[in-house]
Length: 477
Image (cartoon, rainbow, N blue to C red):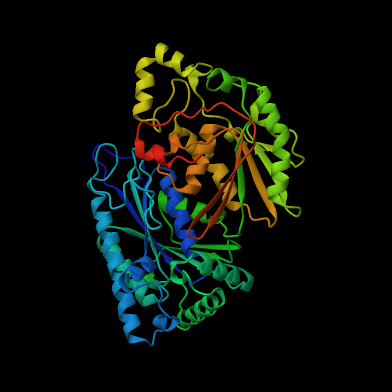
């Protein structure tokens, strides 16, 4: 019971879990590491990635030849061990700070950059939500030998940190080659390097690791090892001695995750009559401008999809999303989970009416928009929990040449968008999702590519920005 976030006494001790990646290069470890950290942060837990490759690049530079990774290269072995230990020490220090918990669940001195001053780096993902007692670090490296893993395990356990190893195994050459090509494009190690030379060098780097690689086995760490093996992008998942709430959540996520290249499309419903009137919630019909957007939407979708790609459309059960999708000639699936945030007693009111009828609540929501719950309705935190099955289905989707278009609502798309674009929970309720615009997101190993396609149909602006100049400057148009 002590591993379940939320079941704490008045002075809780933070649950600490280190997820230690294992696997040869080009097996999707960094992609999986980022996904795990992002998923747990989105659910409201503190999470951070400690990428040993980043430590190496900072210490010795990015452009190291393949023989730097040769186990017979003494200087390379020495420097790589130094940066691995440095990353481990930083991770353990980060866990120590988890015990300094403020009443709102945030650490006193977070090692991640402030979300209000810059976007989190690739090695820093933090869910800055309230009421969390879970801290999860992802130690991202090859960790290819039993000896190395024993060192990591024992150091963490000595500091009161639970350990779970996550191994990504792949023997399908087409997937490995696709990952190598992705690395040559997006990895800092090969910035400015000729693509063919980058591929050749990276293949030789893999060969160096493969010679001494040892897969995870149950008898490691004196038989106390907890691990998950993900084989061939989820074809098989092997679980050994995974215990506790957090470990189980990670296993559940990994069983739904795949690294198949894919893109998703999102758009809000067309402008509604409630949008024009400035009202929130409800089940209003589209306005004349909204109907015009619905008529033009199929042409844009056909143009961006291409002739060989199929599509499934997801909508909510509310009229304005179904009306928006009605002219698109692809299969449609309605999700109750995609319904707009429930505004309770404020449903159908304008913000001016809410301020007049419920002034205290209006001010309270502006102070903490993510956690504020409408009377008889929902908060953004509630919405995130409701959308977890949708996120899982998006992560599970792996059909080639088959994309998904979500026709949704402002709050719902904010939550989904924040998951993929790594916004903090404090930023999430203020992400700008304009009407009559289609967004295409393509997850990558080192981030998420984002493209916006506006349809030339005027619409009202329903965005209410937070009174913070730096965050407002980041808003996407």
